[in-house]
Structures are given as structure tokens and as C-alpha cells.
Image 1 (tube, rainbow, N blue to C red):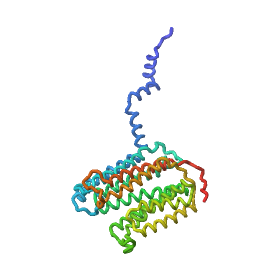
Image 2 (tube, rainbow, N blue to C red):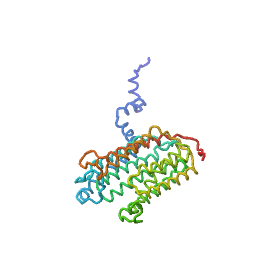
Image 3 (cartoon, rainbow, N blue to C red):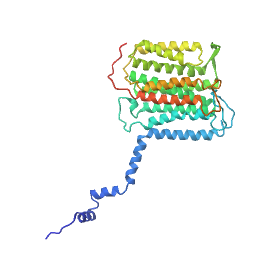
Image 4 (cartoon, rainbow, N blue to C red):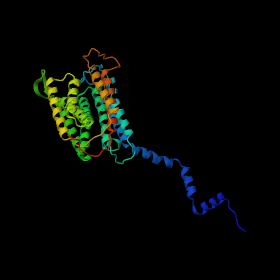
Length: 373
């Protein structure tokens, strides 16, 4: 005579004798959802590490801004007026609209960091990975926003330095990134060149701001050449022109005529109130750089300009026109209005930063073959 056991009863006996079986262990785990949630949250923080670190830094800077500002620029006289249209307010933020509009750059940088892929696998296009290059691009965007907020929010000399160093950090990145891609620099070599040049530039600009040193009296159009002009007038313009040359070289397959013509057109049409001799010097430098890159073309970079590059360029050109109406001596100036042309400049150039990143992300892997000169 055989004893008959039901499946449920046999499972109970086995569990009592030998401990939980595979099925009962699964049931125990499922009955404790908190055990599953913790690894998921940890995974998110790991995947979005750059984003959360940036958020932490931004919160820290915001707290320091409030703490230091309450006893300094909120009560002290104006140290360095920006001469933009918006009226100066009392309190922590001297130019509210011009300052708050810089959050556009911050949001763009955070958006880039949040949308980086979860995997650390190497990609043919570095801008589609989780490496140094997209992080630096996003950092540059946020640096512009923080630096410009510091200038418009505090009206101090150090705020002006933050503004200019942020712009120089960002605008230099595409130039060195393109060189790294075209001439196959290692990541270490790129980082060494980029950060060394930026550190020297930042030190020079900080020193020039504190000393207001004049290099040449009556340099051009009855204007003096100041030490700060080397970074804020020449180096800034030189980076923009070189970037134009590089992208023109890629898009036109190294045609020297276009590589010379486009930066010269940009220099003449986009410059506002620039001494004549400065334009001549910059144009000569652009011609020399165009011939240098044409003669040493490096490797082909294939990127899709439509629509992101064209939208980014359009936003910047419109912003450049808008910028001209944002000064205090312009007829369109209304210092008491919530609408400020300079704030619109921030919004439009922030959008251009986003679309330029999208353009870099379109780069396709190609065989490393040299362009024909």
C-alpha cells in the first residue's frame, strides 16, 4: 500500500526537512520588493554619475552665491558694470533677466549628460559614448551659463573673468576636438593640450583684468591695445574662425577657396565695433590657418550638416544681430522691461550649443584616408 502526497504537501515536507527549495526561495525574494529596488537605484546613479555630480556642483555653487553675495555684491557698490541695457537691481542678482536667461546653457549641458548611453563601451563616434568628450562639451555649456550668470548677477571683476573664461573654454573645445579627430590624437594628448592652453588663457585673462595693462597706445582707430584684448578680442575670434575653417574643410572636401572665404566673411560681417587693424590681423591669421590645414589635411571627418549644423549657425547669426540691440546706448533699450535683447542672445546661443552637439553626434566612422590636397 502506497501513501499518496499532494504536490503542495510534498513541497511543505521537503521545505521542513531541507530548507526552502528553489521555488520557495524565489517566492521569498519576490515577497521583498525592496531587495530588488536597491540595485536598480544604484544602477541609475552609476549610469547618470556625471549628471548627478554636475547637479551637486551646481547646487553647491548656488549656495555659495547666496552666502557670499548677501555680504558682498548685494550691499557693495557696483564694481564692474556690464553696460547692457537691463537696469541694475538691488540684492543678490543685479541684472535678473540677463542672469536667469543663462540657465539655458545649464539645461543644455545637463540634458547632454542625462542622455549619455548607459554602456561604457567604446564607440566609433566619441560624442555618442560616455567618455571625456561629451562630458567636456556639456561642461563647457554649463561653464558658459555659470560664468555669464556670475557676471550679470554680481557686476564684479571676478564675475567678468568667469564669463570670459567660460566662453573661451567652450569655444576652444571644438577646435581641439576636431584636431584630435583629424590627426588621431590620443585622449591623453588631447587633454594635455586642451587643459594646458585653457589654464594659461584663464591665468592671462585674470591677470589682465586685475591690472588693466595697456600694451600699445593708439593701436587702431584711436583705441589702445590692452592685455585683456589678447584673450577677449583676438583669441576668442581666432577660435571661432578656426572652427569655421575646420568645418568648411570637412564639408567641401578641403577646398581652399571656401576655407578662406567663409571665415573672412564671418569676420567682417559679425564683428561689431572692432578696430580696423584688428580685422586685418585676424583675416591674415585665418588665411594662414586655412593654408596650413589645407596642406596637412589629416583624416576625413564625415558629419551630416543637415539640419543640426545649419540650425545652430542660424541661431548664432540671429543672436549676433540681437546682441547689437542689447546695449544701454541703443535706441531699442528699455532698462525696466522684462524683455531684454541680451537675454534673448543667451537663449538663442544656448540653442545653438545644443544643435552643435547634435551635429558632432552625426559623425560616421570612415576608413582613415587622407584628403587629397
